[in-house]
Image (cartoon, rainbow, N blue to C red; front, top):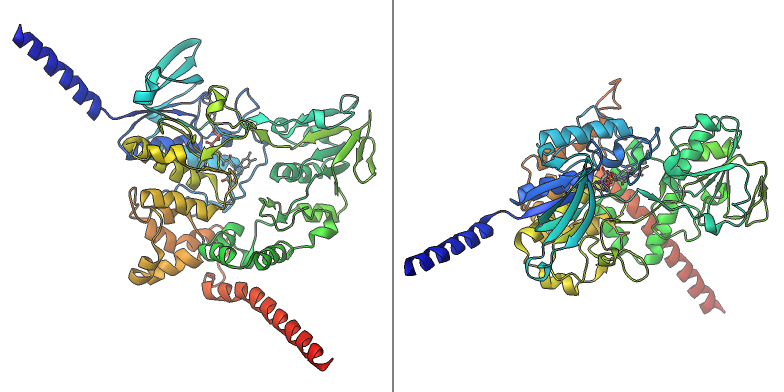
Length: 546
Ligand code: FAD
């Protein structure tokens, strides 16, 4: 009898031990770039990922398809506006000959290769919809979730120790039809940019595009080749930038640098705002094109479009303020002007965040805004076992951001050591400064580059890290998940940048000169300082002579 009791106890102990050593299971929703980063980082932390993807392929929005319920959908002509050296997975550079800005099909090719080479496909259950995610009844103790899925009409429930939501945020169109009086009377057709695929249907038409984001301006420019007239209605305007920046380098390799971020943080705001506006106006004066943002110094994400100013100069696209009212055939704007005989209206008015499979009070505040600690963890959860990956927006690219977010989240799941930290942590706005944000996440897991140490031990690399592009490799230079190829990838990033454009070799490749750029950047504040001092001296002199 005693031996029987002893045996039962041993069995129980063995089960507890097994439970403890069993790697934690993580459910991942979506196999876009965020979901792939999530699988990969779970594996690095010894977790056991299972990813559910409702479509039949990886890539999420980069897999071109017609709009389907619950899935992102892009137009045929989409090119990236982040350049290849700034938007790769941090240990998986693009092939040298890839163009700097990629057509969606090229990026999809990269994403598929990444998934294959990193052996991620076997963790994905395709054509499987996640219909609900609920806390387990034992959630307060275990932090576990019940994930319900549907495949071929069959429903299943699985318990996971943690969940990563990677379902994207370009899925549910924001179609603000109620905000436009008279739209119900309008006899032309209207659609959301999500349903726009190509310009053929608009040949010879007069089209109004509402919204001046990247999609709105891309669509307006594309339409302008076939349509008779295109008007963009914008509430607040936008800075419009070229993808091609100083000395012809891709904009983000010049602009997204640690040094630029340092200057922005240390300069008095009136100087840095002034510099920002000067820089944004170097290509053309936004006032003259009707594009000037209402709050010019606000670091709202600029629009990247190389053709919009020239289409405006050619008179085929024009910019108007918000639409005040529609009639049966026309649109009247807030400045009193009217666009007559409108055939079609395209609402490029963005997307709403929605998580139909989750009790949204978990991640949304009372004002229906998403509130997440560092843009990832619901701040008031009893256990930090739910993470949202890929939601934060910054001037940096999605792929490296998702990688670092998923690395941190996986580490938290593996250790659960920061639980009290979350309960009291401040939630983060979803718009954020890229480098500051990445460094913060990096510092949580020891992956933030230690710049002073690099200057002491590897000055050549340090110069490139500090003055050169803040490329994704920087976040796998040190700490857990360190990639041995990161140093070389950083030192050769410019070679890969110029490789696809130097198709006719005429001389040595020209590399950027960080010190020259430094002087160029400093010349603005120095000039400003000199002008201020001169003015002060003049006013002092005139006071003393009075
Ligand atoms: P998605 O790509 O949307 O993937 C989400 C996946 O989740 C999908 O495959 C979907 O099928 C799946 N899913 C959703 N719900 C469920 C469910 N209930 N069950 C199962 N599966 C589900 N970013 C950049 O960095 N650079 C750029 O140049 C750039 N250009 C862009 C251009 C356009 C036109 C748009 C719209 C976005 C652009 N972005 C760009 C931002 C883009 O959001 C990111 O690049 C990135 O693709 C987001 O990936 P994701 O995995 O988070 O989401």
